[in-house]
Amino acid sequence: MSPTLHRPAGSTATGPYRTHVDPESAGWGYSALRVLELPPGGRHSFGTGDSEWVLLPLSGGCTVEADGGTFRLTGRSGVFDGVTDFAYLPRDARVGVVSEGGGRFALAGARCDRRLPARYGPASGVPVELRGAGQASRQVNNFCAAGVFEADRLIAVEVLTPAGNWSSFPPHKHDTERDGESRLEEIYYFEIADGPAGPGVGYQRVYPSGPDHPSDVLAEVRSGDVVLIPDGWHGPSMAVPGYDMYYLNVMAGPSPERAWLICDDPAHAWVRATWADQPADPRLPLYTAPPAHPDGTATGEESA
Image (tube, rainbow, N blue to C red; front, side, top):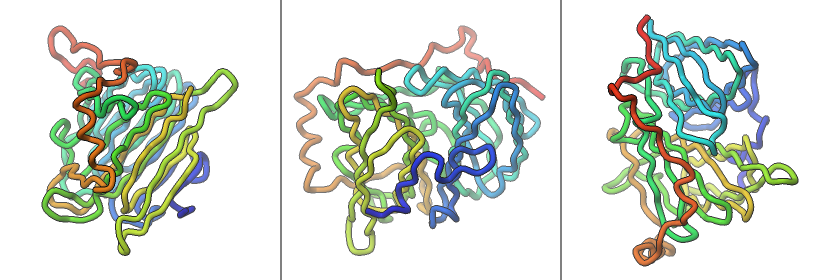
């Protein structure tokens, strides 16, 4: 196991951030993740520096000010309860966050070149996708997927795996720049549903894809844990019986095209062919995106 790739909850905490992973501490070039915790009435300001960010409520709502715009994020009560709205924050900006009721807010980031405008992302615009079948069924909330929401380098999605299912399967990789595969650094941030007797647990596997890609992790993961994936085959992500699993994927890399292009481990790729004859898990989706506002407006965005 590579101990530096599994970072337990609280081990990267600094200031108001319960989780703080930047390219320097990860030992790579692009991907970053912070989890900001604010008490009721709490506020925080920061500079985006050389990175673009998406502020995504994990629990609670907030008001975000950036680039002269104000975005009121309704948020949600928790990651297992619904799709959330979000805010895109460009590089070289000053950002202020205020939460009347308090909450936890993920900041998914990527070093980038272009400076795009700050924007509001409505929950109604998030495509909710079902992947896999049978015990490999999972739900993907594609809020900042390539081809869904414009960013310079950042790709970020949420994955929900019902108790007892395996996701990130078949194991796959994106560590080599070539036709059909992009090079992406990836962060997994986990939350595991509680059970009647206390917190839940899950498991994450990463293993070498070659001598130049040696990452090797078999980790028991709990809420707030992070697993870094600079290279290698990754999967499965295992939700143990009784405990639903959530993870936030944050990806970025040097590829000139912003695309999630993967290669399955050929030893397990055959599993995909079995899905055509299996239904998706009937527990999915755990929830769907809310309907759009009747007049089509993004209700959380206000002018300066």
